Image (cartoon, rainbow, N blue to C red; front, side):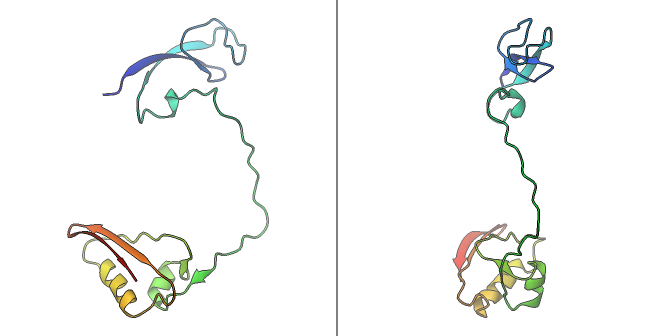
Length: 136
């Protein structure tokens, strides 16, 4: 069970302190600090983190055209269709679905037919029948 701890949070700027004060040291506002109970420990979430740490990073908008990533065409029409025109070099593809729809069969067929060409692939799987790895 997560340990409960008290912290004092400024309602104006969000600064967190360990003890109550009449005036917030971060923003200078008076009577804005309130006691809050927070769960501590691993996975407690961002509320337990001190908001006074870190820095503001300005975001820059994207403009202009973006280039499409070069695709590796597999030669299997349906596979090329669902991957958006082929695989992107250096990417990972997660194939999921109900048991028995042919995920492993499809991959085995691609490896056996030499679809990968000069490209190397790593096939990792985990399912009710076990798990394993294969390269093709």
